[in-house]
Length: 89
Image 1 (cartoon, helix red, strand yellow):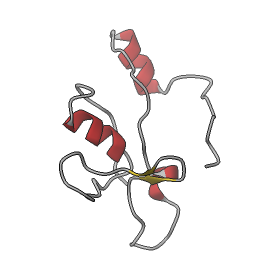
Image 2: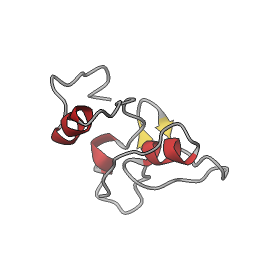
Image 3: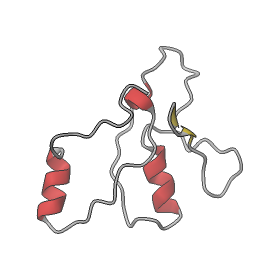
């Protein structure tokens, strides 16, 4: 939870380009802290953060949506946003 409350001083390059093109940035959703690099073990749960806990899939009980940007994926799957950006580790 090292970054809890931190606000970036500027947008990323992609967010700046999206804003310039007229996109509305809704916000950042749950993602794994440090892009899931909190362990060298292959058993590290993806989509977990110390602030929000485990992100779960929208349609399957206890589903790990797997991915450092799993919160964005779930938001799109239930229609909260038309699209989202994320990277995979």
